[in-house]
Each structure stands twice: as structure tokens, then as C-alpha cells.
Image (cartoon, rainbow, N blue to C red; front, side, top):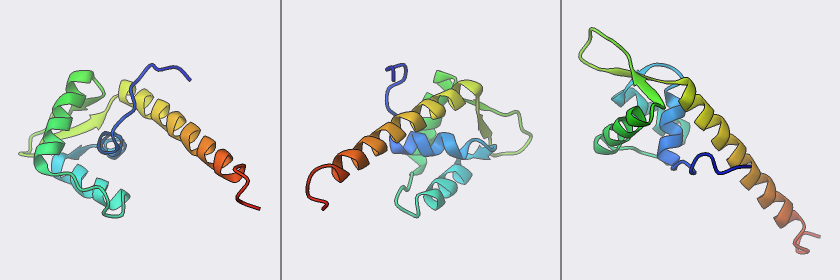
Length: 107
């Protein structure tokens, strides 16, 4: 595995996942809390700061809308970042399971 992308924070990971469907900031906050079973709660300042950064990186884009609430959606570049992060997390998980199962204390 190469170091093409730095590891994502948990908040950014969940924001990108939430944006596989178009959502506004409050909708992102609600879905992230739901997906994490209430463990990850993003405040308005955090979410809009992250959105600004993700827009700058080209990982999400704003949709043209006629409503008051601007909606965002993940880009192809953002999807690649998520795919890489899933591989990275799977490697972490697999190594953790392998090491803890083979440490001599499990049987």
C-alpha cells in the first residue's frame, strides 16, 4: 500500500461517506451521528470548516440549487480517497486481528 493519501480523520471519513448522496450541512451532521451510533457528533463550525477544505481538495462539490441550503456531493476524486481509506482501514483491522490471535494468550 502506498502513501498516496494521508489517513483521514474519522469526521472527514464519515462526511465523505455521507456525501455519496447529495446533502446539506445539517443533513451531513445528522447522518454522521446516525452512522456512528451517536459517537461522532460534528458541530456546525467543524462541518463547514471541513466542507471548505474538501471543496478546496476537489473531493466534494457544491450543487447548484435554488433553495437556501446548499447541497454537496462527493466527486470521483473523493470516491478514490474513500476507496483508499477503506483499504488502509482493512489492513489495520486485519493486522490487528492477526496479531492478537497469534500472541500466545488466546489458547
